[in-house]
Length: 266
Image 1 (cartoon, rainbow, N blue to C red):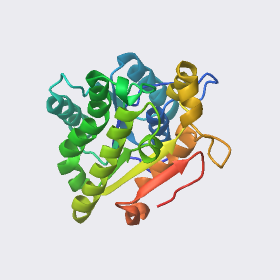
Image 2 (image 1 turned 120 degrees about the vertical axis):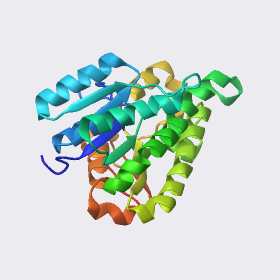
Image 3 (image 1 turned 90 degrees about the vertical axis):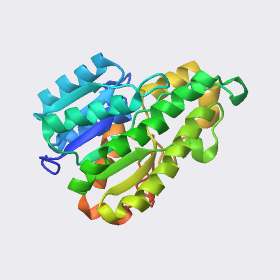
């Protein structure tokens, strides 16, 4: 429980969420839990203050770590550079450094066909995902350069395979994939490890998607060959822990795919 002791990680979209069976119900919270178990200082952001405070209470109580919560919402109507700069400055003021940046936050109007998608729905996905990753990476770069840190971004099979009803979400995720590859190329000389994960995890949001759009779920969400969906903490979160290790520097610039416990495929 000390692999990341003394390290500081920013995790966006990490409010507490649980599945109907009580297990960890979001990728962000699963990552936060995995990092907490390794002793990291955490900065978690999101739009829902209560979910952030619930996460802070549970993580600090169970694992004895320090958690800073910052309400932050990158959207089409905000001064987004100021929003992100506030998160970064509070992180430095509280913990003194940034070792890991995990751009997990993403909102979208899934299930809406492209022809019916509104500009507002497109903005929701692109700002909360692609623009957020862009702003956080820019703002964290000088601090990550000092610590020779790690950036972990998230893409999706929605972009890789062109899922029905997910045009804005897919566009945002494919943009993040391109952004990640460029950063990996440009920042390798600075010792910054940049990777992207394409996960298929069973989350509370996916549960809700299945209930709200059963036909779209049936068409788009396929059971992985391993026979189960990824666990947000034990599989996705642990991969993020591994990617913060110096032993994984050789993976810089690669795309990793984690599908229901199938493992890593560079």
